[in-house]
Length: 81
Image (cartoon, rainbow, N blue to C red):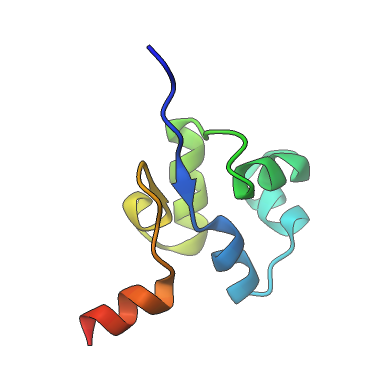
């Protein structure tokens, strides 16, 4: 079975909070390079890692990650208005 691509909002959420890759990596217990791989969608996170990242941003896993390309947060907010 082929792995699915996992899309994410890690980069946008991190920048919104003025957080560096190093800071996020320290909070979730991984190497800062892992954050880069995740942001570029070159690496799919484990379920545990996805939950740890979502916890840092205080968002649900499905807000941060998806198996389908994600709309930007501003597009989602405009749609709800």
